[in-house]
Image 1 (tube, rainbow, N blue to C red):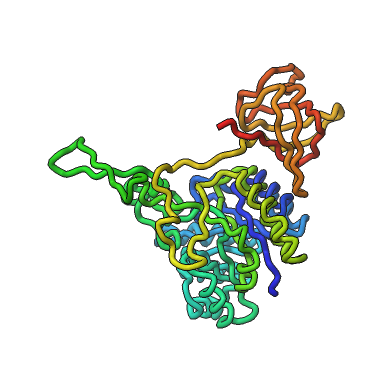
Image 2 (cartoon, helix red, strand yellow):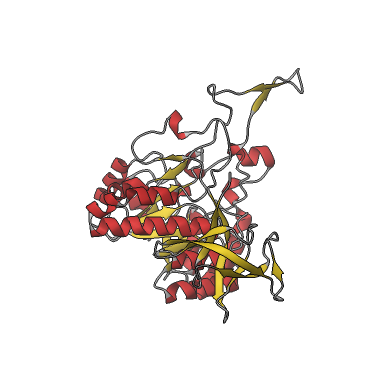
Length: 409
């Protein structure tokens, strides 16, 4: 069996560190330009340098996205960007556009190049083409089944790698190449500015009857006709590895540290358990499913892995996430009093029962005994996002633990 990598997204330096500590073998990030997540916070040069150093100190790789479909006016800036990345030294660049690939190869000949899913990689001849151009890895199109991926593995060179999405949001467009956002709002999904117009609720208006809205029903359940369920393959780790996939990729470069920690920790344990023994993996299945349900999601599907998607892969009655746990913050340090320093993300109160989430898989319930601000003033609640607080907790956490609380909804 081939060595398996768990590849986790990161929107900023804090989330990158969380991904590394909670089980990633590699992390993929975007810079301030030329990636497909313009609304993500992304990394400036200084944070990228820090993040790569932190990851490398922990034996984790970092890949940088440059996967826009470039226009002429992008190329000069892209060349300067690649020259910067040449100095920063990430482990690979993720690219979709052949012109951008040629440019990266010219500027960074020593750097590993990966082909993005945006390039619509659906057959083994496409993989061989990119291999001949110098690509080390190709990200499979999301429309491929496991049977097709296995056939690709059998047809391509042994040292070429396959990366496939195994968890996260699914785009309704072909391999994510969508025109709806551009048409509706003028924001180009292929330049990283997607407005997720596929999640909106639609009605039909007849031209001569302005203001009269007729609901669009795909069936009696509702009108969110483009709204896909989220991909989740936690129950199919053996099938993924047996198909010859080298890198199991999690979607979510706009997600919180809590989401990243939850998904990374769960898939890490599932992969490791299976590699130890299939019996152990099967025995822990309920834990994986329970944990993966604690991050935000839009119901789950296996996508195209077991055949073509059907009506059961769509959500018709809502575009909202299921959110069972609320993110409170990451423990920055423990002071001499034993209090946990956090930058608070959501409201909680003295007396609340919260959960300490540890990288090793443990979840420890604890009571909030007291909350103090930076001046040492005691307060009964934490209502202000981004406020720095010191928490006296019944069970003492450690640095880099994540604090979360069960949602009351």
